[in-house]
Image 1 (cartoon, helix red, strand yellow):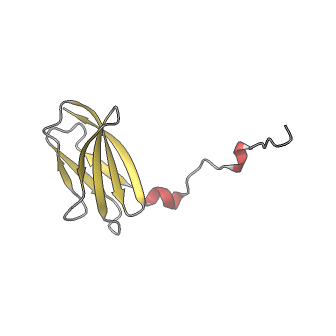
Image 2 (cartoon, one colour):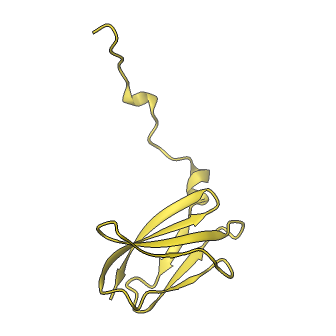
Image 3 (cartoon, helix red, strand yellow):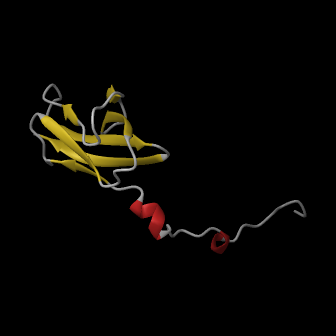
Length: 102
């Protein structure tokens, strides 16, 4: 029992600094989407380097790495109707956004 260590949850802050939130701002539209999903990056200094689309059960369905401009478009007309997750990577920032395919 002497070897047991205790962790106080107050030692681990749960808040996120305001500048971290500002650096991680992507928009996915329209939502729900019909055929083309648009990605918008509010931070022009960050280039989106990778997009990945996952099914709601976690299967990787689509990955795209090469983009022109900072607001790429992804063709999703081949996906069946349902809920999907779009994982966006730009520099060291990652964000996952849920969207609905009609």
